[in-house]
Length: 306
Image (cartoon, rainbow, N blue to C red; front, side, top):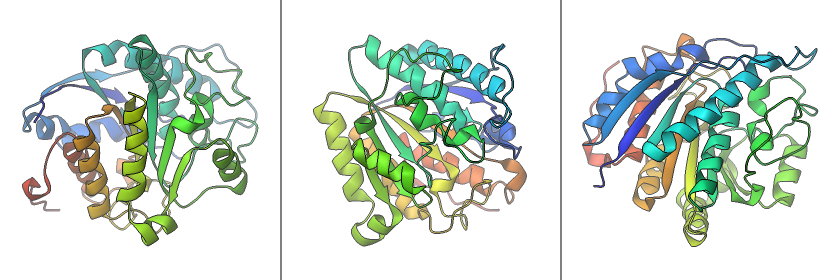
C-alpha cells in the first residue's frame, strides 16, 4: 500500500446554520482515534491543530446566518488547503458543510498550480446548490457547491481564484434536493446519483463512472463526506437527518473503491455534531470510513463496542 503524508486540519466551523454543535467535531474525531487509525495503516500523520476564521468586515445580513463569520472561515480554510496540499493529503475535520466553500476553493487553486483539474465527489443527502439569494433558511451550509462552481450571488465572499465547473462534480446519496436545485445541476451536467438509483442499480456503478471521468481528464479528486450521507440509524450525530441513507456496507465500499482509484487528494469530514451522538458511535464510524479510504480492507476492520 502506498504510504502517504496525511495532514489533519481542524475546522471547528459552526457558522453555516443556526443549530450549534459542529464546532466540537474536530475534537470528537481526535478522541475517536482518527490519527491513530491512519497511523496504524503505516501513513505518516500530523495533526496541525485547528484553523481559526479570518476577521471579516462584511456586515451582518438580515436573512443569511452569520454571514461575516462564514466569509472569514472561507478565506482561512482556502489558505489552509493551499498551504497543506503541496505537503501531503489534507483531511479537514469539521465543522459544518459551509467549510467546503474554503477547502474546495483552496484545493482547486492547488490543482491549477500543478496543472491538473480538480473534481469533487459530494457524498451527501443534499446537493447544497442554493445561493445566498435562493436559500429559504438562510443557512449557508446549503450553498458551498453553488459557491465553488461559480454561481452568482456570492459577492460578499472571496473571489474564486479557480472555478470548479459543475460537470466536474459528482453527487452520491441524494435524497433531499429542491426541484430548482436539481434542474440546474442536471442542466449543467453534474453527475447525480440519488438513493432511488442506488437502490435500483447499486452504489458502485455511478462511482466507477465518475472515477473514470476523473482519470480520463488526468484530474485529482476532493471528497466531501457529510454525516447525513449515511442512514441516521447508524449515524445519528447530525442536525439534518434524512431517512434512507447509505448503509455501513455501502459507505465502506465507496471508500475502498476510492482508495483503489488512487485519485483522492483531500477529504472533508463534515456535519458531525457530537452533542447529538450516541456514545461516540457516529464519530467512530466516520473514523472507520476515513481508514477505509486510506487503505484499510474489509476484513481488517476492528470490532467496535459502544
